[in-house]
Amino acid sequence: MTEKIFIKIKRISSEFNDIPLPLYTTEGSAGMDIRAAVENEMIIHPSEIVLVPTNLSVEIQEGFEIQVRPRSGLAIKNGIGILNSPGTIDSDYRGEVKIIMMNFGKEDFVISRGDRIAQLVVSKVYHAVIEENNELNSSKRGEGGFGHTGQK
Image (tube, rainbow, N blue to C red; front, side, top):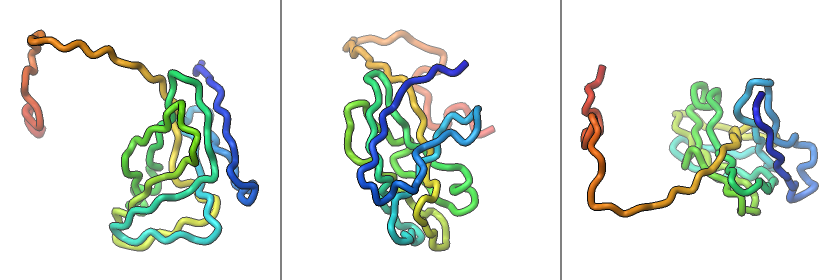
């Protein structure tokens, strides 16, 4: 069974009370759909970046984050992506959740009130302890990177 944590969600304005809160669409979904809180249609022109409001702020317990990820259907059908993906909503952030969207496609894309625009995935956070050292253990890979294993 999937571990559950509680997230407090606050609507910033009652003007958008008709828009559903983030929701898992199926029992096996890893991400909750989050929706646009726009009064009028918002058009994203090709190569344009916009900040889409959600009218929501959240409180998540320390030791967790919420990752903002693109919706695959928007990506494949319309060329719409999320910049800074995955974006992170930290446990101590209380401002409005806004989604940084970009139109990678060739046509204008219209966002309407209540459209599902991204998904939110809750993730455990680990804090690393940084230890400076003059030597690192060797590995089979070594310093190889950026395609060093070939293309196929």
